[in-house]
Image (cartoon, rainbow over the protein chains, first blue to last red):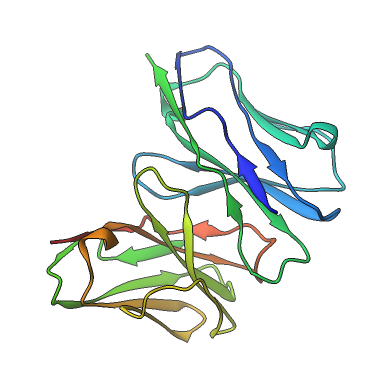
Length: 116
Length: 113
């Protein structure tokens, strides 16, 4: 079964704090893709990153970083020195390359609130 | 216009009305999607079109009818909806399907009275 779990429903931190959003996935495939999307209050989902299952190298993009660990089936997302503009709902998603259902399996999302 | 656009942004309709949602992508993609996002529920895929052909229909009620006249445009025709159909309807596009990143429009907030 395919499943994506984002156990943190809501996280609230004060601006400039670091925050990590957890994502745990389940898949039987050896080839798969993981994604993170951001949904600000405006409603539009914004693509952040795609990682394939053969690339376990961690990714850093500015204040954003991602830690992919196949051993624990996790793909966690860290925001360093958070800012109010980071407030949004963040979604983790999984796609198996052999899946003919043409869909991403979405997590339930984590609402991140950054207080000034 | 750039990216993925959706119109209208907000729609209120009665259960007997017929309306249509429009999506247009300016990214040269060949796959387009309709999603439904309800409060407290994961994103639900409704329809997928690849090269203007429907490739996926996740058991969506017939009161929702998609149309993809070309690779840049996608419509969702609505008729005799129910109050539980009130939600944010999101359109997305991508190069190919399933494992490539999808780019989303701002959504249409639909309220069914």
